[in-house]
Image 1 (tube, rainbow, N blue to C red):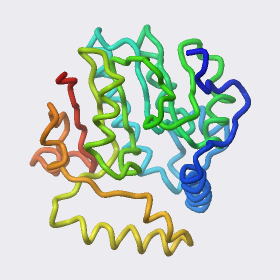
Image 2 (image 1 turned 90 degrees about the horizontal axis):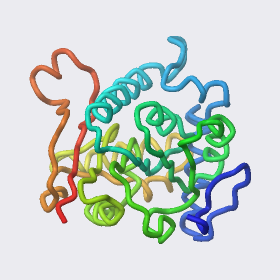
Image 3 (image 1 turned 180 degrees about the vertical axis):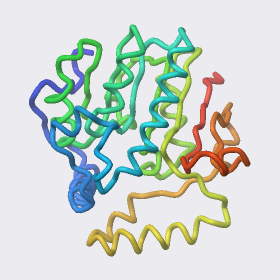
Image 4 (image 1 turned 90 degrees about the vertical axis):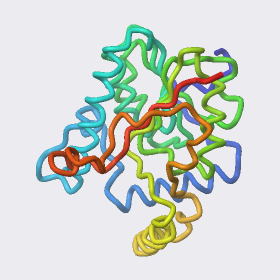
Length: 252
């Protein structure tokens, strides 16, 4: 662990030019969307006032978070946790309350990682690392649970990122994907058009090159289960969470 870029109040910019370009666009977009929060707001996430412009979104994020925390509580073999694309760290911080192990938040976004460190640095079993999981930043570390929460859509190949993440799982480890859309093959072209239109309206059309639309067929070579299906009859009637919750077990 000695060579990891563990965040301790100072952040360097990523060395990779492509990462730096994505980071600049992503942060600028999030500012434009009103999704860069101040430290007081971050400390309270996923709870926001009813008057908040993204209140409905955070109701969904809280529900996903509560389900995941309950799952971890009920699975005692989950000890060390990695969140990929942790942003400002709110979910990683939430997960520290239900494990006796450690929680690591990983991201390339220096701005939000600095916020994460400032807000949550007193949590003893939590650390943040600046870097890309597709590099060797994690070295030979292993995790019982790797979480992608609203981040899997920023990886072009679902198959490749899952293969990469699997390398960092313990033998009984699991990958969980939450708060991200999965599309039918027939829906992807229209979804891409909507995303391009949205990013263009926000003033950042280039972001469409970094935002990807995945479908379930890409999971066919993995040992996966759907723990929450937004399209089931009961969930369509009684639950407004539009996101699948997918669990992928280590099948090595």
